[in-house]
Amino acid sequence: MDLKERLFAQIALKLELLTQEQVAKLLEIQSSPGERRHLSKIAADTGIMEPGQIKLVQAQRNRVLARLESIGTGATATPDSHLREALLSDEVEEAASNGPSV
Image (tube, rainbow, N blue to C red; front, side):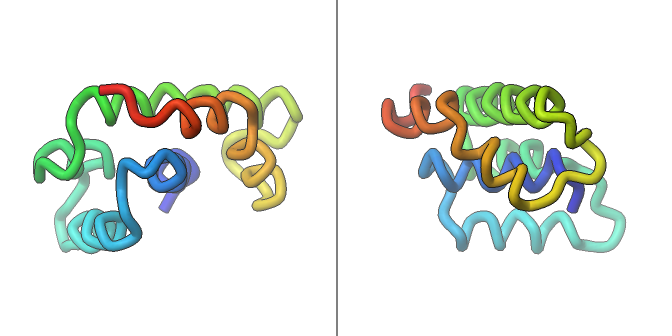
């Protein structure tokens, strides 16, 4: 799974928009032969997430990616410590504390 997909799943979990079981189901579908959709598309197509929730997670993911770039890790080979630091950033913490806004 690439970084954008990992971030999508981790942020959705952090914001309590997905459960571990739902992420596992999305990953199971995504790993099916011939499947090429992103997790967000599968989540929308299956009804696991609403469009507004997906947009929220994608916006947070973009902020995390920008933060990763600003600390110089690059988006292709991000060490887990930098990923954890970015996920613990103020933006994601604030969104999590405010709850999902759909």
